[in-house]
Length: 226
Image 1: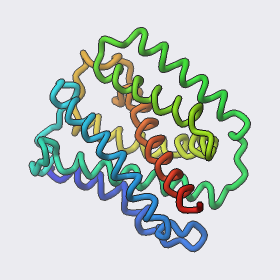
Image 2 (image 1 turned 120 degrees about the vertical axis):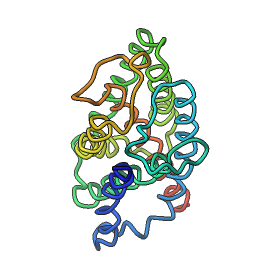
Image 3 (image 1 turned 45 degrees about the vertical axis):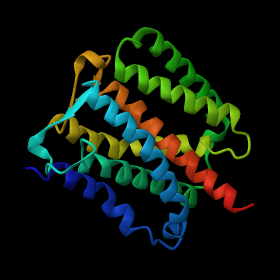
């Protein structure tokens, strides 16, 4: 049972890694952009993770981790910030390669505006809860920068499509993590709304994690073409 979280990580990355040599996507040729994006984003989210452990926002069930820790975090949690972003950027690139036509292009700005408004509203009502405050505050900052400040390259319409598809494995993986549970949330630090066993905030945690990864991935690609 101590290998559950580790096995979940391996399951997340197995197929994306195995299919990275697909001839149409050529994802392996983009690792030079993928890996630095994952590394830089991972640093930010690991600091966030450490803070949440200190603030007792969440903890890890010792029955489902191997017990090896780095800076107080289970090694499986650190691997999470490699396996999940890799799998989701892979989904992003597969969709772009196989389905270049994207109807979300005309709606992406409106969707971003809606999310900005949602973040502000939730921060107004949920600022007293650490997970809610940091989660939606961070998403608001990243979203506003990517959508309103960054004008050099546009990708949000592609990002939203990939995010929606990524919700399918998200419900499977996070469903396991929160149902067993591997990750234990402090109910005092979340809004209390859940989809099954998954806290409402986790959907936007995933959104922030993927948005920062994809933005940096696109930034590295854009810089390389100059």
